[in-house]
Length: 331
Length: 281
Image (cartoon, rainbow over all chains, first blue to last red; front, side, top):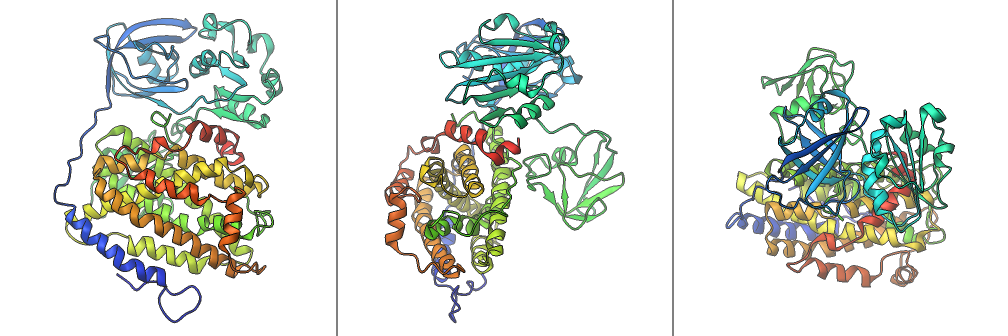
């Protein structure tokens, strides 16, 4: 161990606090070694929930609601408004869907899926009796007091909002529900008629922020779920409390395939055009640290030995990629 | 409601250019006591990230792993944000480098990685996880305190938003370090042994950094006095001894869990109102 750092006030000796800490930490080091005796084992925890599809029904144009239950009818883990499930689809694809049923109903979960992309096509094809694995529920859109509330839902964005609307009973709230046309809006029949304004593009045109926010009770917290432009529109115009669901990082578009090599002479991992280097890296190194997956937190930064975009600062494997060729990483 | 919350880092930015030297107006002692965070936390949080990264391969609970990944990103952003505030201190005439160099030595050398057998290195990892769990107990207590501290309303809004955004995320993720320690080790003796050292060391760091910042403040506010601390604490601008000391005891019982500390709903509500967190959404 190197010498403790210098004194802060220019005295000719090492800093008193850190001199005092050297033997203390030394004692901890020795004590920690003795901890190897009687080391308790790490228990594996299985977080998979095995469920079965109870029913599937068309709720609106291109929207299917799927009800899930325990195969033996046992109660499911509780959840709160804003929670989502990770659903492992039969192909292995994992998709997140907001729970849109009744939190008091512990026998079933309900999700709703709009058809866009491969995952939703699979979800739409689910039939009663299909076994599924789900994980969660987890909350990335927590609903907290105090009211009053203004809920703004765009199309399928109604799914997390619906349980919030029911939970807000007893406080002052309003809901603005927007979408292309009424036929594309699921769960209209489950909404109360009072306090709810349905505004569709075909009848009222594309909404402005002022129009969306005009129902807000004074001092309201806004809960908004829908397409990103809707969220940005409302967020920019609303000075008060603003809650929105955080979205998964955008898909990779316009990328080119390249290769990662894990150390000089190490294994070579191909990175497909439509996946991130992190996704590819995790296939062989499932324990690599990462967090934001959007390139800002810096957790996944890996030193680059050769190739690739910037060799000096390392490579943020969650967003950075090479234009073909091979990047040798120091992992 | 901590158990089901999914943790995510937020891409916050702060513009320090208008933050004055004494950002708690007329109270250099409170200003510098809280400035300690800019000097100590960035190194400490980078160390958390590094130690948690080493713990990842040992985790056998997918939900805990997900929470640890969220925690790592939040801590990395805290370190960046406080680095910015420390650089602003330098611009105002207090060069934090000598103090930060000491903290670097503390985390990188004294508490850094060890050589030795795999068993020795693993026990050192567990030891450091118990240190992080003990520190995170205090960051949750302080995070809740700063969310509640109405007496700071007159402080500079940018700095207050930094402290409350950070405090709110500490409250959000307050269970992760403890749950990780319990998952990989869980021995209570080690947990208590660590707290016995962590609590006085944290207190000592705050006292010495306040003293050092006051001594280097170009406006020459004079040396800090305990009297002034007690006055600021009574007014609610700093945590009272009666709020800090009982927190130590609360950590020790077998039935302790961080979910008993702090109010997640209040943290979530603050993050919905925080200018920095809102802009990052």
